[in-house]
Length: 208
Image 1 (spheres, rainbow, N blue to C red):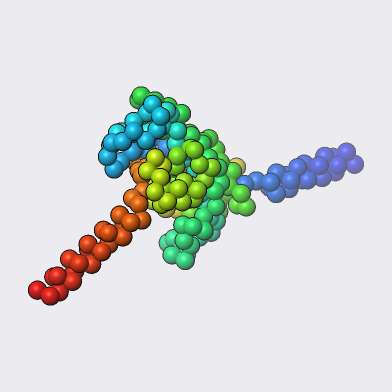
Image 2 (image 1 turned 180 degrees about the vertical axis):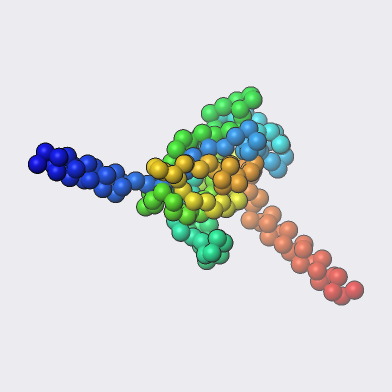
């Protein structure tokens, strides 16, 4: 009788663990995949001038977020119907290092909500000025003409999530994360002028 009770208890524990198991990924980068600033120098943060080509340090106050979608793939290819604005924010961290580790972030092991170990996930890293709670808020401010705001995003990454008994993958090794950049966003008027200039060139070439 006792043996049956022990087996039943063990089975219930296993079911409970399986029910709460979530897919996992290591949310971080390395010294070979730093976050850099680009688009020229400018004193864009108090006491911390952003210099073109420099890795972002902790004094620049940049938030890094991990965005995801589950099962967004068809036969090993990312589904083009899944737009980047459909990705959900999973968690955030900050760049807390200077010197040799500038541009490096470490958010630890992230539990991917609504997933199981082995599930496929579409992931993206985004970075923005910490004065704003979200990437979207920072982008809105930047597009509104606030040149003190910086934003940036990695390429889309597709990988199989880990979690017991599977090893936890990293964004760099399994996801193919590369160095990414943050920069100010040109004002809409500047973007519009650039587009008009290109259209003018096309028109002139056609006339010739």
